[in-house]
Image (cartoon, rainbow, N blue to C red):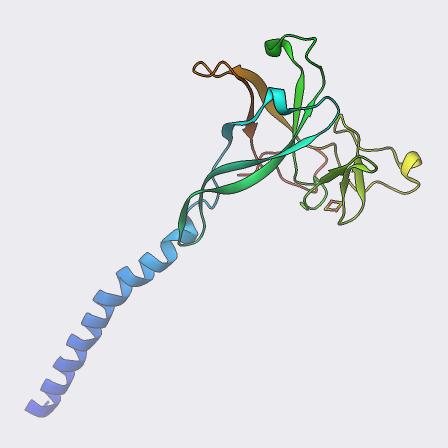
Length: 188
Ligand code: FES
């Protein structure tokens, strides 16, 4: 090998080495978020003041929290929604008030479940209907097969008192569940 070839090969090897030194951490940095979990777990949150809820009139509430997508961390934003149904009125002591909470995610294929006085809980995507209890409306009543594989996903909730203001709040443990299954399975 003459001197010119030796110099050529030496400079090539130095160039490849430099490219690798830059590329490996770069590729690792870019792909690292894809290896992380993309959603947070359960979120426990006060979502509504008890005095603002009416018996039999579901109220939709937003759940806020931090979120991580492929490359960006979002601090506080809406990460889900829930329906709150108050079952007992002011004749019952606040701490004994019965309240139910449901995820607004349709158990069929994940669309957003809506509510209105005429139609009750309904999903506009494939026309699933649910009672105020979260149970599917029977096929015979609908006149077709209700597409939902299970009832609305109920969420743990409780009535808590704010020690400073003395106000009563509904506190919900929000969680996402797999849809399309007959049983309620938390999403990983
Ligand atoms: S996603 Fe709700 S009925 Fe299909």
